[in-house]
Image (cartoon, rainbow, N blue to C red; front, top):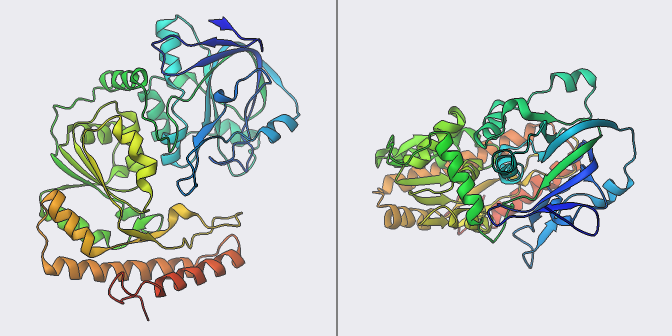
Length: 422
């Protein structure tokens, strides 16, 4: 443990997954209601804290140049003022907990490595691990008292070695006698794979939770998103499900299984096809995976999000990216923009079936192609009809989104044999 000129203590042995900073009398501010993964209004407020310990992620995939970004809102943090209560003892800072499970896995769990390092290797006894839940509104006293994380969130933290009794959710600003702030050991959209120390930590989590590769429940698995057809999917997926099932794949709906069941299914498989979605982020909990991974993308630039995560864990993985993402029609309440993650996508069926046949030896009939085209049109119609009648957060945003949606469909006569050009 060494002191830097700012007075903060930095801890960085060679075996650590990332850096760790210890602060005395550190102030932690809960997330403001308008916080999101791209703009985090909350966290540790201290002039002594190096920027690398703030909430970070890599830039959006459509940026001209990939760069590491600090998403903690520094202006908000500097201007914040309010009442504080004081907590004695030593605590670990776990960071924000985002509501979306995919973002939770990608951005909320990668400080947990420090609990094992400090408690088991350095004999530190934490009184708790401080997490900042994301909420769309400020909670009153009773709501805070009754607040519970979704079970799978707690299951994930427990899998990573955080005892449920140590999880402390922060809803009001506090100062802490002693607070350890770990650096995130993995970053969303990073082009750089995780380091060997963090990978070893994840492998120890696997072993501790009984996740083993020699349990072969299903050798070939298709991970489906058909139950989320209106909240981010590609059109026509139901026909692909039937095709995969006919070719010996087990159809897996991760939302119907515990976290450990999901991890064991992936760990024991030899071949996995993912419909791109939050289930792919579950692989961030594994250190290694022997299965060959194939991803049917919903967005053309999806590889930029997942490449480094997969590269660290998997020997062979491939993306199918002949896809067009239509403008999203979902406008969340209290929002002035559409939710891009809820868009529906169109797959180029000629390239798709060639990919399935060549890379996965899927036997494709002419009738499969025709059924897929019909299902694609049906799914787009259902998506449009659903959101056209849904009360949005902002009528003008919805009207513009609908116009963009129709315009783009009419611009794609060659993409799906004129089926939308009417």
